[in-house]
Image (cartoon, rainbow, N blue to C red; front, side, top):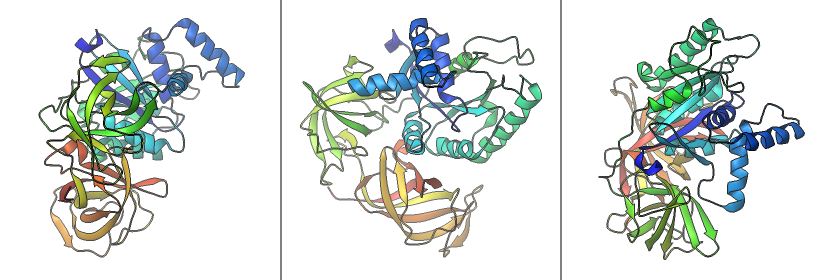
Amino acid sequence: MADKKPHINIVFIGHVDHGKSTTVGRLLFDTGNISEQALRKLKEKAEQLGKGGFEFAFVMDNLKEEQERGVTIDLAHKRFETDKYYFTIIDAPGHRDFIKNMITGASQADAGVLVVAANDGVNAQTKEHAYLSKVLGVQQMIVAINKMDISGVEFSQDRFNKVKADVETLLKTVGYNTAEIQFVPLASLVGDNVAKKTVKMSWYTGPTLLEALDNIKEPEKPTQLPLRLPIQDVYNITGIGVVPVGRVETGIMKVGDKVIAVPGREGKGVPGECKTIEMHHEQLKEALPGDNVGFNVRGFGKKDITRGDVIGHSSNVPTVATEFTAQIIVINHPSVMTVGYTPVFHIHTAQVACQVTSIEKTLNPATGETLQEHPDFIKNGDAAIIKVKPVQPLVIEKKADIPQLANFAIRDSGQTVAAGMCIDLVKKPM
């Protein structure tokens, strides 16, 4: 049974067109999670749309359609079992709003598969995803070097080594220990090395992608911390009522618990009592860290709560900050960041504009030593301590208290400009 195996959330990320969805589809098909008949239908659909070869990519997309029609709770999630684990695959779609979804997906994931095409190698989106994964707490990473079958690559060991070296350099810069990262060459469309070993890369002796997934270490579940469950979406389901959906970050939520959603519509918090919890259409008595759940709360109305609110127990209310101090690193800003700058902060599932009220100091990113007190501006590559004021109520926690709700990405004009974590805050009186 799935509930007996450890549960891991895994997000598939990478540059658009590098084969994320095809890899997921092939993995699900080769492990018997999708039938021949279902795949044949998808193949026909793909050919009708002039997209022959996209049948595996349609697996997740097709599921999304079904799920959106029935408004179940696994919106872009698919369950999948290996010998060792019960996975929830989070497929981050590759559209223009991709990064917003990718941030939500990565902030929910215990591990990630970074898909990089062997012919293209590392490019802008690969870099952005690597940075965000690290900032958002994706601790373990598998790198799938895909499209090894493509013309010009032809299963070449030299090409694999070149792309692997480039990705290693990138991941080291971001802060990953590359000695712990598995690099797997594969050709997802034809199925080489996804779930089945291939003879076409006899030079490679490592695991298939499926085996690499089982090599992931089981993440620790922070059940001893207070309950924190950021809301991802809110549905109104006939016969049930209001059903918020989200992932438990810390603590445990049980049926019958007295809970509160903050900030809530008027910033005062919305109290209620948890009536039911469901994951992948199964009723649960309790939800643990890592569980993506839908739940019904007596006392929550459709207009009371929204994406970005956080659920906690009434006895330990999530922290709403009127101001916070953050340590950030500027990744990709077109000019410089100064006092008064008001970009959008992506924190758990919330997106809130926040104004930089003070640049306290710049730091040496490697050692943390102070370089300059109160500089006029900060630019690409700088690490700094800043003070920030959200323009509307926002739940954030200190890194030292609840690290799972302390990390954020800063975005402006469609790109990630900086990333960081909250190190101190001024609490809003409730």
